[in-house]
Image 1 (cartoon, rainbow, N blue to C red):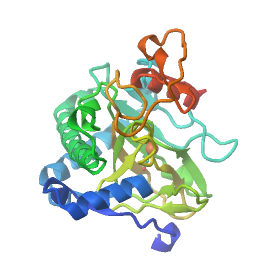
Image 2 (cartoon, rainbow, N blue to C red):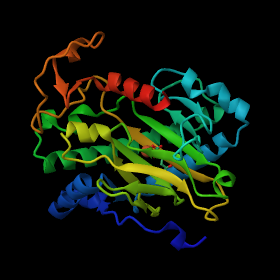
Image 3 (tube, rainbow, N blue to C red):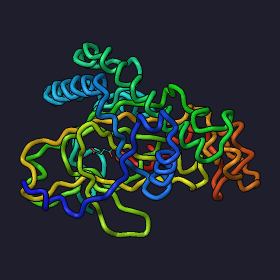
Image 4 (cartoon, rainbow, N blue to C red):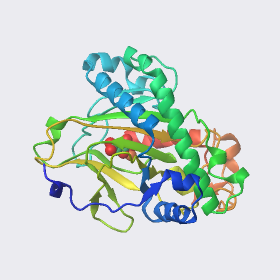
Length: 324
Ligand SMILES: O=C(O)CCC(=O)C(=O)O
Ligand SMILES: [Fe+2]
C-alpha cells in the first residue's frame, strides 16, 4: 500500500495538550482557529503513558468482541437495548452507506452504562472506566480553553453543560477489509457527529473530511499518540456557529487494504437537560414562541426557526432521522 493511495491529505493543526494546560496564548489561539475553521484537529498526547496503555487495552477488547460469532453479537442488538443507542451491537449494513443504493460497511459496538453485555466487556470494565476518565479530562481541557477563547463566563461555559453525561458513549468500530478491497467504497457515510467532542483513535487510514464550501475529500492520516478530535453539531449550536462541526466519512481505497480497519471513539454529549441553543453570551434564540406537544419547558424558544429541544430530545430526534 502506498501513501499516494491516501492523497490528498488534510493538513490539520496539531494541538499540544501540555501547552493547553499551561494556557499558552499561542496554543489557545491555535485551538480556536482549528475549531472555527476545521472543526477537527490532532491532540498531541504522545507522552501520556497511561493513555498509550489503555488504548492497547481497548484495542484488545475491540478485537475480542468483533471476533465473536455474529449470532452472539446479535444477542446484544443496539436497537433492542434502549432508545438512545448507547449500548449494543450494530451489524454491517444496518445503516445507509455512502454510495447511493449501498448499505454501510462497518460493524460497531456502543458501550455506555451498565447493560447486558458480552463477558469480554465486563472483563474490560476497569479499562473502559480508565479510558472514559482520561477522555473526560481531555475534554475538560478543550472545553475550558475554548470557553476562555470565546470569553464565556464559567457559569455559561462549554464545561458548564458537560460533566459525565449519561448520553456519552464509547464506540468500537470494525470495517471488514475484504469487503472494501475490490472497489472504491464508502463504508461510513458522510456525516457530522451529533454530540460535542469525539476523540477518535485509529492506526489505519480511511477517514476523510470535507471542508465547508469545498467538494474535495481530504484524507486524515493517523498519527501515533495523537487522537483525532472532531467537533460535533452540539458545539456548533452552543457556539451559535462560531465553531464548526466537521463533515467526515470513511472510505476503502481499491487495493489499499486487505486487513480489517479498526477504530474506536469516545463520544461526548451535553448533559441531557442542556438546551440545544447558543450559550448566553454567544447568541440569542429567535424570540419566537412555539408550542410543541410533549416538549415541556422547551416550548418557549426557537433557534434557526426550530423549536429549542433539550439534548435528550434532540438526540432521540437525530437518531430517528438517521435510521429512518
Ligand atoms: O472510524 C472512523 O474513523 C470514524 C468513525 C466515525 O466517524 C463515527 O463513528 O462517528
Ligand atoms: Fe463520526
